[in-house]
Image (cartoon, rainbow, N blue to C red; front, side, top):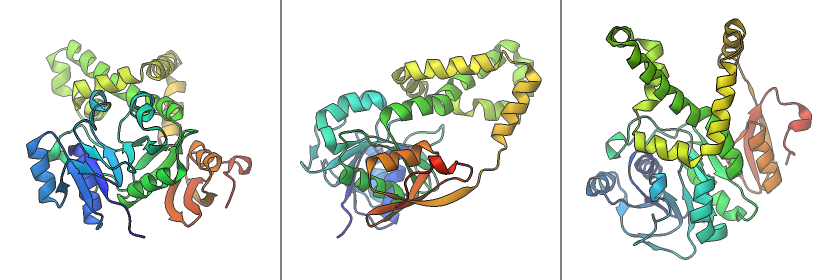
Length: 306
């Protein structure tokens, strides 16, 4: 059976890169964007520009625009709808409430501080982790259709719930944006000499705050509770003796983590166990999925094998 088409709403960096990657792999892709320049750029890459979308419809728009992203578009009644938003609970409450089991929340952990259709990169998703939500009412066949889109773009799929996703990304994505902003603002207060001497460590530590501030604000405010909790944990770490803090941080940042392969049945509890263990799906195998988990996961925490 041929793979269903993919419709992408929003053809900026993430949506345009996904469309370009899928077109390059031979997948039929439809797309729409309110920006004529983004539409023209996507059409030049082989995307069919249309307001009529079917198959798997991907919302690749900013979080504030997510709830109305399908307005004025004709979406096939049997289409599966997913999104690429960096926060999942608010989208689940808006888009998910309207669509029920047809909606599958998603978030690819990739992208840069650049934005717009000029930042499109067909290789953006290669090797990236793509969180894909499995809620109690998520229809598993639809989850698999979205997973196959992510895999086709070169990503690895991490099964999660919306709540688990938002708690996790607060620590590893949202707080780093706030820390980057604080570091940049504090360096500016230190004066022009400090900024003139800034080199690699300052550049790396502040890179992400080069993103559009409106985008970052929507992200951290949309996930305010988990982000505040994660930020409090960082502040607590900063009160530790510096030698201990530096040693522990260095150990985490330089750890070598191997992988071991696993096969997992297409069942919600087993898939979520894979994600919680730090693993990911890399292939669909009929009634199973293949993937990997960290090598040091204890045997009693390994997801049930297929």
